[in-house]
Image 1 (cartoon, rainbow, N blue to C red):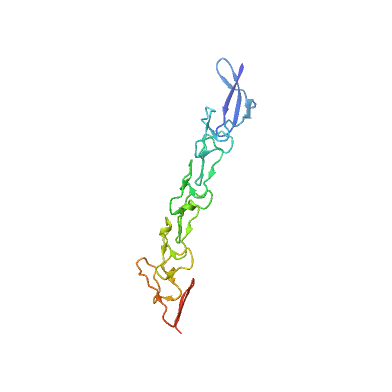
Image 2 (image 1 turned 30 degrees about the horizontal axis):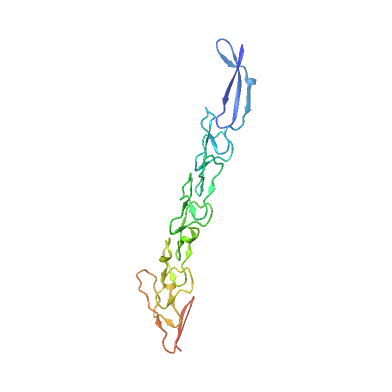
Length: 231
């Protein structure tokens, strides 16, 4: 008899098995169990690549939005998760989205998207942008990294405000004393003025005007509210 090697790849890893076959003029058959020899090979594909198929050890590059962080015989690349991106081919890793950008909760992304007006992302690697809270607004100077607060003497009761213009100015003889105010009643009468009623916060509630302090009375106001002393 004569002999030949039968070599096969074990699926899912990098180990090959070589089996010695004894052959005569009719057929070849296994000699015995001791004729089986296992040996390992080097990973055929480098980082940032994947193997085309089990039949062909051709390596192809990972596409943008995908990566492989170590040499392997994997038939596919790993997807960049949401909050991370990769714009290059043949990459061993993904990059975090910078502040002001996100992947809009999508994976496999080749780029990060800037937060739309009224939204922000303050941290690296955010999967999505968040709405600016009430009392704040989208500020172009911040590029979606943070929302700016409505300045003193203004208020804003909505979320995702797109600009400073959404911060509404208090009426005549009123002020807020503080920034980042969210409702009508945060506008209080200034010192030397007073109101007969408590200001309502509903959109259709009319403004309660501030009147000049009566003669002989003392009308005081600060961030805690206003008082009138008629002694």
